Each structure stands twice: as C-alpha cells, then as structure tokens.
Image (cartoon, rainbow over all chains, first blue to last red):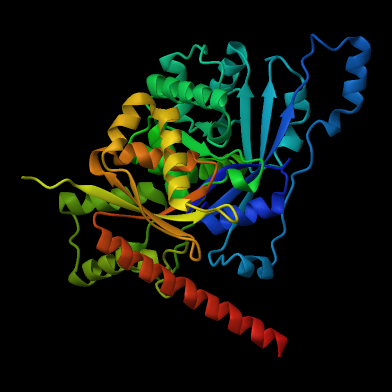
Length: 319
Length: 125
C-alpha cells in the first residue's frame, strides 16, 4: 500500500524523448509523486475479420505491455538537488470504442499489474460502461475534441461515489493553439456537468520542456476556469485521493476480527461469556439486584483505559 | 487619492544564448501571448502596469510588475510562454520585498552549491 505525497503529476508518457531526464526534472521542480503512463488501444471486433481475429487472439498477451519503471540512483537525485523521497507509480491508459470488447476480460490480470488504470472512452456507449462501474476504473480521461458527450447527472453521481476522477492534460495546450481551444472546451464542459469536483490535472508531457512548476500549473487551472481552491486541490488532495482509492481497489476489502478470552481466575464483573450474558449482567445492576462495589467500579474504568494499550496482565481482553 | 497598487512577480528566466535587450524580449513575448490568450481586452487591461523592472543574465532572475487587478491575467499566461522558459518564484506587493526575497534565494542557492562542492571534494580525496 503506497500513499501519494506532495504535488502529484499522474501522467508522464513512457514514449518520451528522454524519460529519465523528464522524470528527474519533474522531481526537481517540486513534484513528489509521479506516474509513468503507457497507452494501449484495444482493437475493435468489427474491423478485424475472422482470420485477423485469430491472429489477434494468439498475440493476446502482447496487447498489454509490461510496466516501465525508472531506476533512480542516489547520485542522480543529488545532482538534481532532490531531497524528498520520490513516489513513482505506473499507469496504463486504455482507449477503446467497442463496449463488448473481449480483450478487457482476457487481459484483466495484465492490467492489474499497474498501479493506476485510466480509460479513454471514445463514444457514449463506452463512457456509460466505464461510469456504471462494470470495469475497475481509477481515472477517466475524456478526449478533448468531443464535448458532445452526453452525461447524465445520476451517472455522474454514482461515478463520484465510487471515487472515479476526471483528468485534464495541460501540456498539449502549451504548444498547440488548436489543442488549447479543445482543452478549454473540455474543462468548461466538466465544469458545467460535474461542477469541477473530482478533477485532477496532469502534464501528459512527452519531453522535459513541457513540464511546469506546480504553482504555474495552479495558474493554468485558473486559466481553464477552475476556482482557486479547486485548482490547488487538482494537483494536491484530489490526486492523493485518486492514488489512495486505486490502491484500495487493488487490495480489496479489509476485515479484522477481535478475540476475547476470559481467564478463569477473573473477578465476578469480568466473568461473562459472549455479549448476551454481559447484557444480562448489566441489566441486573440496573434493576438493583446486585450492587457494584467500589473496587469493581474502579476495575471497570481501568479496563476501558487499558483496551487501547493491549494489556495482558488483566488477562481479559487480548487483541 | 488611493495609490495605484501593483504586484511584483519574481521569475526564474532561461534566456537564449547571446541575446541583447533581454528586457524587451521578455516584455514582447509576454504581451504577444496575452494577446493570443486573452484577446484585446486582456492586452488593454495589462497595458497600464506591465513593466519589466529588472533582468539579470548572470543569475537568470527577472522581476516584472503588474497592476493588481490584472494580476490573474498575467499569472495565467506565464506558463504558456515558450520562447523563454519562465518559472514563478515569488509574488510580492512591493519592489523592496521582492528584492529581499531575491537576496534570500541567492543565499539559499549558494549554500546548496557549497554543500555539493564540498561533497565532490570529499569524493575526490
């Protein structure tokens, strides 16, 4: 189980001009949590004929690549003056058009190797599938040019309850005018539909020069129409939540049990087996059949205090 | 009279090699970007206060002043400037305080340099 720390940049492309340098630059700029992203497009069934489909099935394992990791030596960290301990995650972005695609189920285990799973739904049907929770999703990154998505309020509410986060990439809008317009449209669309909640902002940087200083990124967020608080949360707490929820999803539900043992030489007030007998015992006090002695009362108080400290000498409660 | 309030932004600048009139380069690259992003309104709003107060080639630091009401317009365009790579270090309300910040910043970087040099020396020996 890992936790995100500091400022987060949850999307640095693995197909980078210089991956190691861009990771180091991001760390030296002040980011502490970084996710290295790999893109996968699932082939749709309609296009591939029967022969092609067979071929695709044979090469099924190769659809999802092995996660890329970057090894950073302490000398590298020192050279870039990085003092804080970096958290480096792996992320996969799957874009697909066909909601009944078999590859999702087949390569589920391969996908699970990654720390973060992002989906790019390319039409309304896939968007619905992603948002209703039929697949494990951590981040939804919408395509900038399709502000024609139709999102219903109930779907959005349910997806927010499941802690799914929406992503806005900022590096394409630094270089390209056309992309900038589309990303502004996208952010306004998200603002209109889900009121800027559950939004994270990522770099999607393909070279180290596309990265920006975290406080500049906050300014970019304000340019895109987020409020001041939302824009700071977009690279801070929201991203932390996204990473935390993702790791919780991988891990599954955690449960714990409490065992209570009664030692034979315990006092009268401690001698009860199970909750039922304890309730009976307490009832008898209320009706006045028995009276608690001062000693007993004192001991009861002690037990309450000792519960947290895991005391063995009383021999009553062991966790 | 109420005085004309300003914001002073301290920037870390990476200037292209062998450039003359770096203050004009900074000013016009910023202004062009503002025109591109915020249109005529943005250009007019910024006109009154935007000035490059101080540029230093050796230390790669610059200070620009902006009218307070137009601060958000300028701050949001700074990351989009691609001719020169800019990085905001500090935003102050007076020129004196931004100079004080620069002094502190230099002290900090010098200390870091000294530490790294000494560690290199120990490694050599």
